[in-house]
Length: 116
Image (tube, rainbow, N blue to C red; front, side, top):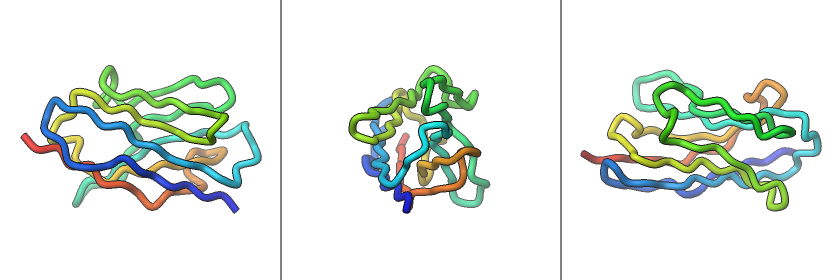
């Protein structure tokens, strides 16, 4: 049973930083994609950053490129999203996800609110 649990969300002023964590359990296949998505009120869920777990190769949405960094600590089975230079438009519920298609397993989400 795969379980993903996010933490690290909160409220921050524009220009600030947050680091989200996603603790994973039950993942036995390293040949998967891990990812962060976000969903703002009234908007569709969008991919923010994805990573090929086996190689660490990462991809980013244009809106966060240069500001966000996805990383993993395989010893701790934890995925991270370092978010710098936050903007009000980054306000959303952030979810971590995993699977061969990046979308099979989901966490419950953690709220990020950026004020101007």
